[in-house]
Amino acid sequence: MAVASLGLMVVAVLLGAAALVAAAGKFDEVVQPSWANDHMVYDGDLLKLRLDANSGGGFVSKNKFLYGKASADLKLVPGDSAGVVTAFYLSSGGDKHNEYDFEFLGNVTGEPYLVQTNLYIDGVGNREQRIDLWFDPTADFHTYAVLWNPSQVVFMVDDTPIRVYENATSRRGHHRHASSGGKGATTSSTPAFPGPQPMALYSSIWNADDWATQGGRVKTDWSHAPFEATFREVRVDGCAWAGNASDSDAGEVARCTGSSWGKEGRYWWKEKEMSELSVHQSHQLVWARAHHLVYDYCVDTDRFPVQPPECAGR
Image (tube, rainbow, N blue to C red; front, side, top):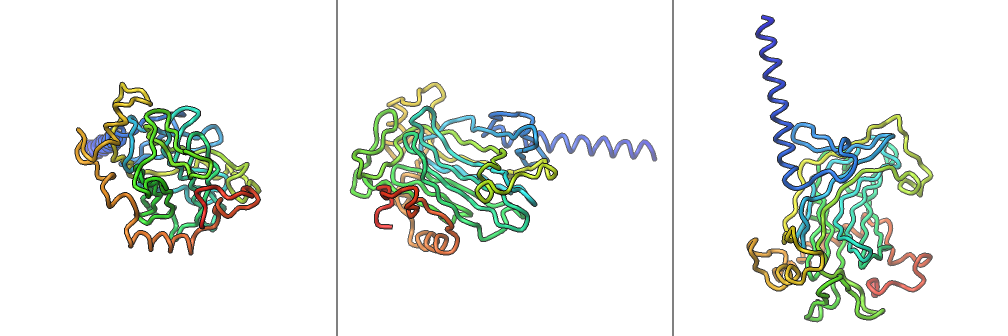
């Protein structure tokens, strides 16, 4: 009897080890720790980023990409998560970087999460919008994604667009792209659009109780630590940037922007139907903004007495 029990224990341990290897393999193909390696934890076929009183943690994609779609199946920190921020974003490098952010702002128990999106273009951000979600993001996994191509940047929740940032110049029939450096704007009155800079995918969890919950009035309650954000899957479907290329490599820019075909196969994200939302998606966007938008920098006249160019007409 004791031998049989020991055998079952050995089998259980081996199966658990196999599950950890499978999870590690699935995620390790896409991402690697970026800081606090011991706060990136495998749990069965899941990946968790952990925040405690000592540290948060994060990961970064192993490759950079130019255009495509990045997504994560994510379950947010449950319970009292006030002061905790979980981020999922794309970013290029340097002072003149581009960045597309999802920031999930924790809250006191029973209060809805707020999701903040932001865009940095040539190193300048201050384009925040916030929505509340129409579901409990801590109860199950939901898919958060960013689609970016020469025509638009789209933030999506479970395939529902919640924000679109358009390339105004491409709407007039031509794209505005620099061969290096990613400069987007042509005049002060023309809305800037992110130039072609290769971007990596990042995620992190950290303590931001100086601003994240009710403007910093509610602080992190460390008795609830550790706080864990859980990933079921992380995906990037885009034009992979050559590992030995510089961030301003003109050949790589041409390969990823000049044609809908490339050595990776068809660049679906550059097809005509991806240059703007479908009618159904447009209706979804109107619904999401009408019912769930709680802050939009475009109408914040205290911060912006002169409306930013991209906000004109809104």
